[in-house]
Length: 172
Image (tube, rainbow, N blue to C red; front, side, top):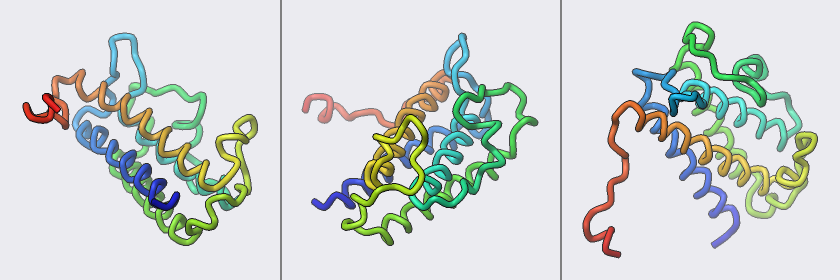
């Protein structure tokens, strides 16, 4: 297996976690615990801003979602007022647009370009964002982390898990 295939798989698997968020369209401000936590709408916006930051890190161009940073970036706190946010579908569409662009960028960079240094690693996070390949894997891991948060918020509404292992699989 080539490194590019492993990175593509990691991005596609983490992208699958967006289904937890999409399934919460009816209740996007649901907190995962009685003590709070990140709700699905904030998580989706955060993932979109992070995906834009990935492009900034790799290419050095400005984050295309810079305008959303006060709502969704590092250090922001989820708000319980939906009117404080762009519409759910707008956020979802921006995230999807950027993820498609990420996958196109990955194809353009190719396996041989994964060891290239990034153009603009975040201060204090230079190591996990040192190379293009590391940056892509870091974002995939980041997204999986937040996908877990969205899954907990989803379960707090009484929804069943997306994956329920069969009896054969449980015996495996």
